[in-house]
Image (cartoon, rainbow, N blue to C red; front, top):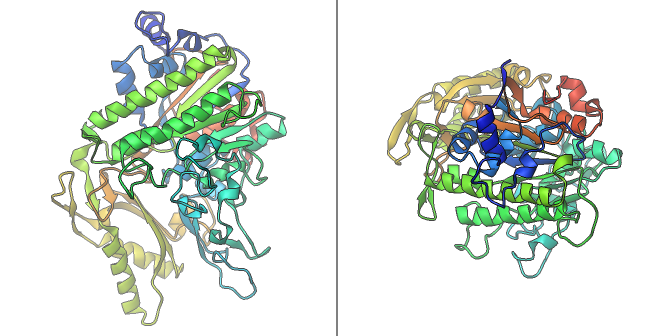
Length: 549
């Protein structure tokens, strides 16, 4: 492990002692260098952000809010998120200290061989096996940013959205527990407890802001972890933008959407609930995710600007604009913390649920996975007349996760062999033909190997029967509207920032040790003086606290 302090001049610039720091980015927060008792932890996930993006930006903007955050704490330069690198396992890891095999959460859309189909009301004799969907599809009204609450005056009134989004989930869309014959809500699907639950048990206040009502999974098995959970629906119709577009299709819309969550957290910093209706005190554990960087990486263009990267790890115009946006919003949050005299008692943790791949536009190979999976089914049924489709459920972004109707070693080996034998033609960054090999896969774990990869027993009801790691640059999509994705196991998917800054931590430290974002969970509890081993996943995986003291 290599650990070093930033040179004094660089630190002075980062903390605002040198000229050029704006009033919106006060040095007071970043300059809280001496260890102090942490009473509040603000967790910020900038989805899609790479450590390379953060380094690129702070090198060019040494007086920025992001540079202050880095200079005011410990920056782990070799942090990795979960594999698969999807939003749900990534966020769940940060809140529990566990990997997908332990938490039971592999992606936002998976399959469970033990639960019963959604809508089942008479469970006797029903064959198990069901899609477990943790996306906007669970909303009572996924077209509305309030998920179906029925607020008037949207989107301006969105801060009036409930802090208990479980009430906005349509129970008829949930899988059913065969033992109780009742719907399984996201929080009940999670196998381990969360930092929010531990904080609540200690009498501390909790809050969080995220993109779907299904993020009530963070409540944990108790269902009570997050007292104030603000979840405006990102995949709803973006009012004021092109008809049919959600908040991710136009990057300006994504920034507007992120702004609602920032307002919610500003209200919480001020001691109110997210709606600024009730004075409840600043939470001990709270935070939000940003989506605008992610959409800037994935969209070919938006608002007249080219998306993605111009060369390996070099942000293009749209992404630069969004790095500026996130910097300004984080500056607003830290300024409010300082304004409320909370800098000496607040630790900010900056990270990301996932990265995005590829960061090299020349590497992009878009592969239509539909024909590949159709071909796999056809080949299987040709050898097994009368058999069902082999692929029961699939999730393919820049990895391939398959759940099969036949989970036998012969079937999983067949699927692996078939996929690795398929070559074809996709498209490159300019939508021109580009050849691919082996279905775009570099490595395939099937059957027992897939279970071993995720450290679960073969036949586990949740584990995918096949996990395919894509070749660098491969994105599974049938069109040309995306130039990047996440979910896979390349460094572009995994190498995210991890900065712990403010109260209770030293300033100006760069640590090159290889760490994981799941270590955020026990670190939060440790900073608050709580026992990290209160987390089940920490005990099961021996997840350690980040070395920040």
